[in-house]
Length: 308
Ligand code: ATP
Image 1 (tube, rainbow, N blue to C red):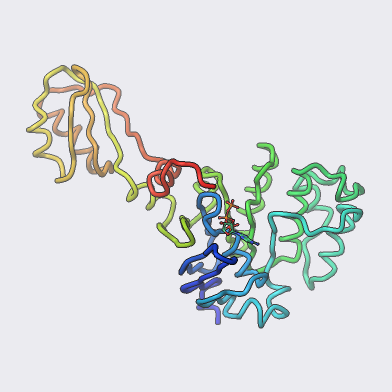
Image 2: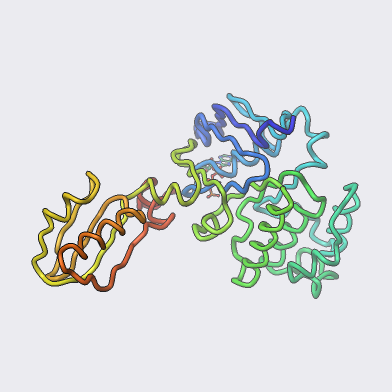
């Protein structure tokens, strides 16, 4: 049982009337990992997550969560899976701390409620009715509610949307702690830095399918070429330099004495360039490696035009 993936989605299809929100999506989430699901607005992320949470039934395909069916086995999964929805689901007059204590009481080994309120900067508004909390406070309460029961697996739908930088960092610390405790985390986000800093694994979803998958580093390495630039005396023999470099690398001199190499920029390439410079009596100045960010990769894959 422990060997099964935390989440296994195969060929998931979900339609709303004429709209195909999810169109044959495959996603496997390993136990104990943090997986970030990225995608443009309307890509099908929330629909996929809500199907894994058992709130929606697939039109086709299969979904297994901790080896179980999220709809048929909802009762078994409820104590083991934490859920943070995009919008509250909290009774408007209930007080923040009261709500969290209520959630804690539903679980056998909950986290300490006061400590959790403190962690997320909610101690001062513990007695505030839900509807009077700011958007960011409601968001933090939703995050606390998702984790208070010490779940094995937690789904966080845009956990830090609308949070100020301090609260975002508190949220990130909480996710890191869950990860360190072996909890599986599946989160959706529009913040590429959030995915880069938290996720072991990223799935980029577009038009209801996963179009790229890997660690943030793998995606940045594979999704686009990187650039190494340096300055030296003008007119270096780039043909000779290119002979020393792996096939697929290109080189140019966009301005006299400024050189730019494009390709797979790795430590070996840097060593080859500096060694060629040494053999040719060149002292390269201002060596800079420009690596593509996850945002570059995301925009390359999903395009730059706005989604409706
Ligand atoms: P966002 O980043 O904007 O939250 P998302 O990737 O989470 O987007 P979904 O919310 O899953 O995307 O929506 C996927 C598609 O399904 C969109 O075209 C959306 O308009 C449609 N959709 C989602 N929920 C419903 C619903 N309850 N009824 C009808 N259409 C829906």
